[in-house]
Structure formats: structure tokens, C-alpha cells
Length: 64
Image (cartoon, rainbow, N blue to C red; front, side, top):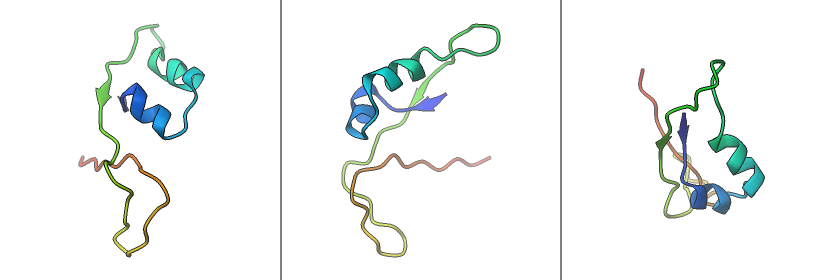
């Protein structure tokens, strides 16, 4: 599971309940997912088109 540290998720507006639900998620066999943590952005995001977003975001690129 790719996620963020608890403080980053709370900063993005998730509730404690939502974070706890995410962190205890399991697969069909009842085993907790291995978690890979990615950071939130340090600053507000400016898109490739020059638009500044109103808040910090989680950004990641996945190459398959």
C-alpha cells in the first residue's frame, strides 16, 4: 500500500478515524498490507500549466 505518514494525512484533512481505517486495512487473507510511505509536498503545488493549487498535495509518479 502506498500511503503517507499520519501527520501528512492529517494535514491534508483526513480524520483520525480515516487514517486508522487506512492503516489497519487488510487483504482477503486478513493480513495487513505492507506500507510504503511517500511524503507530501513541502510547498503548495504549481501545476505544469502554471496554476498554483490552494494546498499542499501528495505527488507521486509510478512507472510500470
